[in-house]
Image (spheres, rainbow, N blue to C red):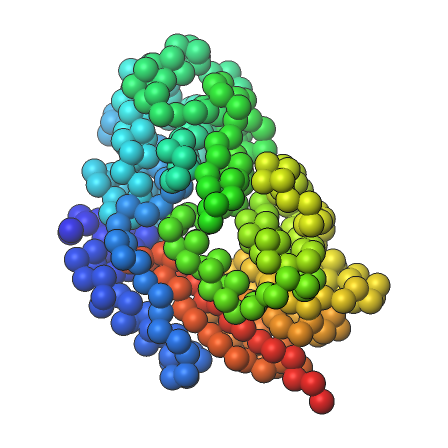
Length: 376
């Protein structure tokens, strides 16, 4: 299970032939940060080909079309035949797109000259449904022979349920632009998590490791220990996955997310699953939490799942003012988590901390923390 670009692409940190070693190293890193009392890291039974979101970039070098990953800290594209952490068929779809781009003679986008058409591809996978969403990122709305291209893709990959052209004509490091053309299908796919259905578009935030996401959410529910009467806050709720899952065990759930498109998806997902006790709001999470506190809304359990920077000051102060009985914190950055805990420990006691290996072989660790209010 040797990867020829392991030490170049920066995606993986650990060799793919010794998964137990990577878990031991991650456990040590977490213990160095938080002490020896943390729980044992939760790993995967089969930690290969787990990513349900596969992104490859194009470049044109020495008169050759290249497609793959950026070398770490560069914009040099590295090709790899078999990425050990990406879903296998999604990789095959990307290879098909590369061959068709060459066949149709579509020019590759040049970042320096700002010329060309094709920038990258993004394949999203519904693990439980077997549905695939193909997004091709281009620099212009003028796409020659687009319909014929789509017909060829569909012949070769009938499992693709939708094909989208995303228009990114900006000089930016962001993968996706804001405009899209749906060339086939509805522009989204469905997947299932823990018995619930979720709609996924190219722009949706959806955890890349479906199997471990279920384990992560089960851990969140275990820590929350809901009895059915609680009012729950789900801050940074994305497309509503945690909100809708926990709603089955709570009286009411408030979900908040800054991204308006994600909230639209969350509302649709609630309707799909016929769930009516969740209330979604598009708003800055810190401002929303502070508003709940000012309005004296009683929250029993606050679940927070912020981005890598962690909670901003308004969110931390808002949580302290909101005063829920429990806080369940999901973190993708242990260093930011530690800083946030220092502030929250003014009123809360750290009860449990469990690392979850959401991203095997990479240097990332997801962490679930339970804090309980210290009543004086």
